[in-house]
Image 1 (cartoon, rainbow, N blue to C red):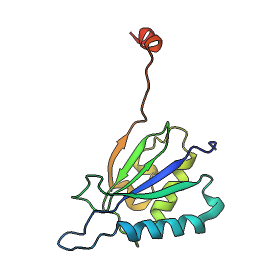
Image 2: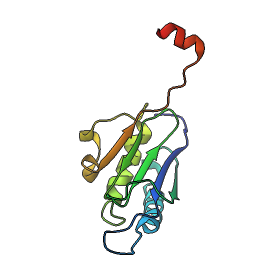
Image 3: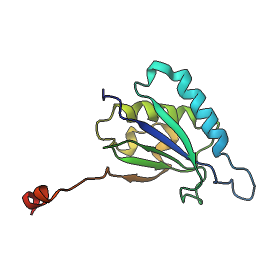
Image 4: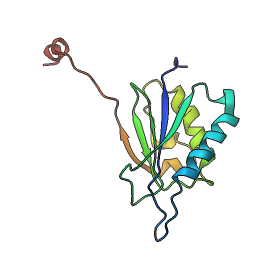
Length: 135
């Protein structure tokens, strides 16, 4: 298990269901915070859950990102604030236990296997001395 690393879940608050004014992001934030609280010790790390105005996943609302320093970042789309909470909480547990955040789609719970929009590797900071060894 990792030491505390400031895991974050970010939810798009401007995504709309197609053809409606409904913005499910705010409901998703509330539902996710409540579900993580209920999960308690099942999730060994604290997750900050917050919203952001746009994550450019407009064609696949509602979008959710999992990110943490020195771990891969995941962006999921087509998330329903009621139906997908269990999958989001299960992924939070799994993500908190992964050393580098890297997993294949078969390791993601339920709908998250097919709703992944992106997996971004963690940032690598190269120093001049390490660049010399790499060349």
